[in-house]
Image (cartoon, rainbow, N blue to C red; front, side, top):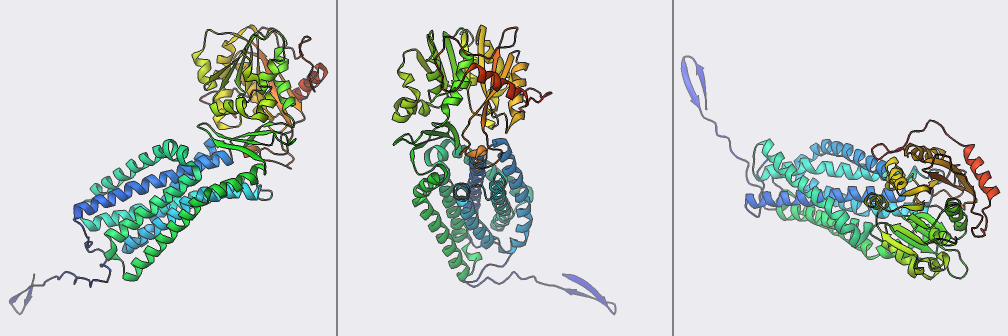
Length: 561
């Protein structure tokens, strides 16, 4: 109502604002009007929040799956996690901005986004692993190619996840208007709780039971079912008849693609594994710790052992590595020997070649590696069936935790046969704290020998290990042994044919005594295939020529590898 005055007369006028005419049964509801729901508003809000919960769980699974697979394929889990998280959060912000233009078609937009997200996120692991297996180095871009693909998937998934929230906010407000703060609180509560469930489900349920590939595909299926059911079942009136059929067709197509991929995922994984490791894969299993693959070992073919895609034992040259690792440290008292890692039994084989060894303790994290070393015919033949020797005792434990728990036992020799320090998961096993614990296990004239990675291709890593040992109060004698077969090293070292392929092994011999350790072989020791005192002195000089000075020690809180 309003008032006007004309020629001294007052006129009262009344206006009536009519609500929009109800839409016809097949037409979409006008934007801004209350949603026409098949359920009560309270039930509708609950269903929207339940969908938020499910979609948030799926989104975090995609994120963790990318981090885990990239860490395995590319290496350096800290870098891969940083890349995925930062790119994805940035993309989520962009996705939220883009979604502002879709608010007028919130239901249709959300349904389309969930279908695309399910397909991209569900197939991301397959795509990343397939590129790794079949394209090798992407020409001269190995190390960059997988990262480009990783960034692309992180960006795409982040954009789609970021676009969800504005559209869900619009949908929940159309059910029942409330203050913006309350709606945001409800939405984010469901989102964060869903992320918690997804974050716990990935390592404790999906990864151990289904693996990365099948787990991602199942997550995509759950994602598309949740999004499609919400839009078609609750907000179907917001779509035209054609739109409803189109969305239903898209969702069924995405589900069909994900199901077909899941049916053939074992064949895909087998073919990809053969592309990576060769055609003679005999054993391939995913343990609680790592992926273990054995190739060869029959019909005269050399045995190769891969752990998480990295060549750890090659039957062509393992004798060079294990002779250089073990025998210089055995020149002196060696009645009691501790081997950290070395579950394959090859270091223990070399230790037992020395007379006077009374006890060998092997600390290995992965029980499946120990089982294979005991039961696989080719690996048993290579390690000389050392686990049948009563002097060998096995401790299934993390090396760092074992050293912390054990303080009263002393050893004449400690052999650190662990993965390269450049691998993030191994960084703590090359820290000053770890070497302090290992030094505590030595007798007064005991020796510690450490595998420290290749010298020629990664000198900074090698000399950081040596500096860290010195910072732990140990005297050191570094040396390197050439003759490494660079033909295949997967993961971060997949560098066949490259000029910087690792062609040596680096070691550091350390003692607690006041004098520097002397590199020499025991006169009473066994006859070796390649290693001699003359060769050891040459190896020591070769390593010394590459010395980098002024490097700081690596610690748990400040890793420097």
